Image (cartoon, rainbow, N blue to C red; front, side, top):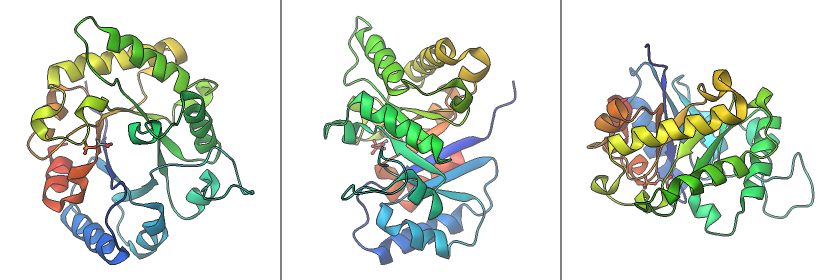
Length: 254
Ligand code: PEP
């Protein structure tokens, strides 16, 4: 079966500490992936740097995303919030929603599903993060995953599901080294499970088409095997997206 184009998303989190460094990191990545084909790269810098990076980028193979979005639409008296409409207008095409670091700060599945809907309504593609806290031997993590995914998509209609991206990010694998990532075989099984849940909710035709990314200690050394054997459509990359060498080798491995 022909494989679809891959998607590699860089989640810079709260890095780097200054716009100057963000520009340098971005342009080194852009230069080194100029000739890469068949992989869509999305860079999600801190929102503060977004418009400047969008404005100065002249190439075509990087798109931009945000790391979070308000569940309030449009504009309003919501101190500290950024709406999907605002992010879209400054050039974001994607937004990460429900990252485990935000869930750890108190974000509920209900809030996550409202943010997913706000993003879709504004024309952004939400990258919905889900993943179990730990992997038990009895398979309890599968119920946690099913519950979280279903609740995070509550009220998201089939007509909008074709613009969704799901990132499977097991919490136990985040922010470590490549050896701590999920194995390609376990990843493959989990991706099939996620596709089954999506197919149950949206029907096979739509459910099977939702791109599934993996995130959790993807580095240059494990990206090839995870990409070949893990049945994923790409990666959501955290710490390794701050290293030009590592990030570029992940993109090339796809
Ligand atoms: C993440 O936090 O989304 C992530 C994938 O982090 P890391 O690659 O550092 O594990």
